[in-house]
Image (cartoon, rainbow over the protein chains, first blue to last red):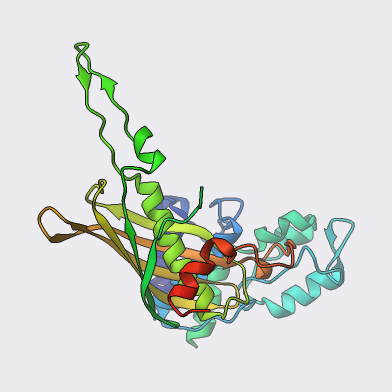
Length: 126
Length: 172
């Protein structure tokens, strides 16, 4: 499956899971900021990706767990440099540009763009 | 009032499916308000039209599927309805009818589970069974939530409210 085919199927997944219009989905759109995803939607997206692509996604593999509560990652409401480095290592598909510009913990959701999910699926499919 | 929208569990297969039954009774307060007698546009009085609210049929399915998810995880997790993925209704349910909720576990992992389910109704007047709705749900194991929010230690989901149902079905 090539990148365009994966992108088309990821778009379908997001349209179904988030109730957004197809034209709202773009590679740089963020799941939380642009597409309005809430935490339970991440679980829905994981389930749908598994079904659509026939892959198994372990907990924490696509989206991280408990970043906000992890004292190793967060200090005074900001994600630390160490936190960003570790998240980057764990989530190489994610886009950290916005979080690095403003490391406020509420911006963690901004690392998940549509493109990040496409990259993740591409890697999973080998 | 007991917040229980199922009366009995008639079938359970851990990790797979659970079936529950509810008999809809005219004595249920909610049916008096949904819908009461009204005055028609010409001033005439319209009879009450008691119909089981679709939202409470979804709640019945959530309880059916939630018990399946809880049972599959040996009731270790607090299982909370996270999202109604899809619910399509094609028929109303009225007092005197028997509702059957059938839930199937599609997937479960440490964070939660998703289920599919069908609601059918037995019409005792005709003896016929009809399809009422299809409902897809997502449940969260809330202690494993992404935000890391903490909840009380005791399992406030599977309380006495459900204990007699579970005991009668041999699930605890």
